[in-house]
Amino acid sequence: MSVSIVAARYAKSLIDLAKEQNVLEAVYQDMVLFKDTADKNRGLMLALKSPVVRHEKKAGILKALFESRVNAVSYAIFKIITRKNREAILDEIAAEFIKAYNLNQGIQKATVVTTTPLTDALRKQFTDIVTSATGRTVQLAEKVDSSLIGGYVLRIDDRQIDASLKSRLNELKLQLVN
Image (tube, rainbow, N blue to C red):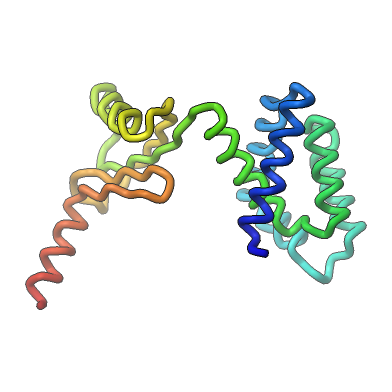
């Protein structure tokens, strides 16, 4: 079975358990904490994914890092996943949990990349575009990339609207070559 399917199943089970225990918000914060920690600390995920590092050592690493910092439900899931030798996909499970939580809460994450920081009016336009396309509340992440020359790139999940001058110039270049 693929990693994403397994991760999605664990995430769904965790959401159901968190709702049942009335700790959904706390578990969400814990999954964000774990994902951020894993993203910023390459060594953590290397240790968890390593077949050389013993199971007990991996459980000890998770205990030392997270037992006192996360909700009991979140830590119990970490222990269960480690017991089942699935700790290598904990970052995937956290990412799937965050996606499922956002879907459950009606939140749509989107990223807009522009050449200059957005004004309030432009931010509202991008938010309105995403809201009308998805029908959800928008969390807009903004990035600045001067290599775009002009325009913007808007990403919503796996969809992308590339209205940058850089991409248009590349398209023109390809047309001229052919």
